[in-house]
Image (tube, rainbow, N blue to C red; front, side, top):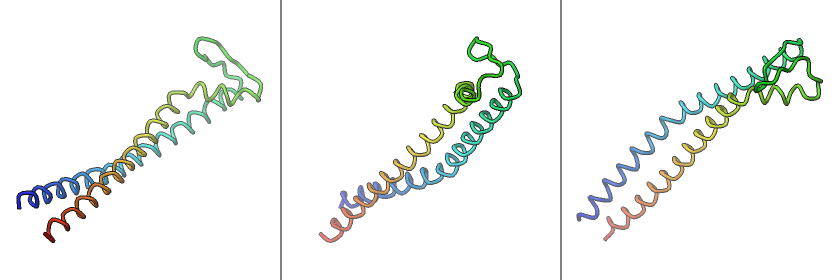
Length: 120
């Protein structure tokens, strides 16, 4: 009988974890979208500045009116922090989704075991 009570507690714990992770998904999804938008915005600003001939400091080196073929690569380098933030936000969202799937699998297993214990 004690095992049935412990299993019920474990099922309840798994349900709470699923609710917690589900609640984080919206927040992490919003953060990921905002970080991706900030990266796109930063790239656009850097490209416009480069195209307009504005002198820019690229890690201690001055760049002004680079060839069009290298402008995008330079802009990406200038916006490395925004890209890092976007990648980290995407990684956090994916990790939360994986944890949620794992928690759901654990709950399913515990529910199956509980049905077995109930039938004894």
